[in-house]
Image (cartoon, rainbow, N blue to C red):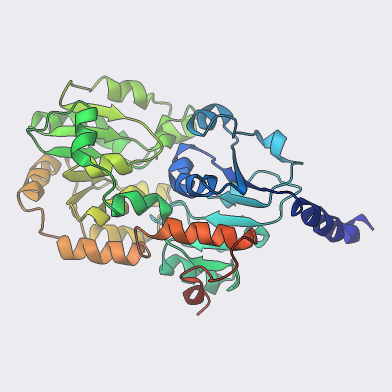
Length: 383
């Protein structure tokens, strides 16, 4: 009896909520990187006087300091509170919401790790979402063909996290100056993925030290999971302490923060193993060098097609000695792989620089505040 009444109760609850003068929108930020992914959308919606934007996370201590004061709610606080719209970037770690009108999932990366390009069998729970917003056509088609999402759910949207970088809104020179780096030498960014099989665990400290010794500024930006206290992510190593020990005033800087984009803008060349930020760097059309980590593909369950795609526009090295030599060679000829970088960026990111506008339009449509025109890309999503 109760099961039959539940849909009726929800409809009544939603109808009552629509009588309120403002709509409540909840963003789930599981870890700091999700603030970079969803923050541009939340910030844009916050400017709408008819909306109240809230944030939640299973890690309150890490997320509450990142969001506007008074906007954070714990998982316990949100469970029975009514929300007109819920948005997250991690569907298998969603808050339990008993009174929620609409839900959107936004993907949080493009690297094809942890079977996200092979979704069959993953406990994703997409059936609870009104819309699933895809960064590129390739992954959208994979999910449609596998039946994980329906044509009515899928939206080809792009990547809001990338918009400021793609639009040139980060001043690389200012970022370097604020980091205290001297501007009389090129700057290399080292940004490995998290995994005990990553380049960080193989040779991270040697990579940083040798690049600096070769006459470069070095920015070290680790994945936030590498800085997590949980040894599943860091192998029991305190990488924050180790990287800080390598800092040199004016030359080597270890940085933290939810968004790597400012540091991408500050770098003349980037070194990674396999990561979404490696693909993001292609939008700037600057040299990327991949440090091969032989066991990473297996440990991180990476789609081999994505490995080949990243490497098709980068130079791959296997030793620290080769890395230093190749980095300097790439700096001497920065345009060498330009056409390949542009091709990959175009394939991986749908219309970079414009995704936030589409995300806001999608949210407003579900909130009943703007039903037409439909979100750009929606027709393509169901073609």
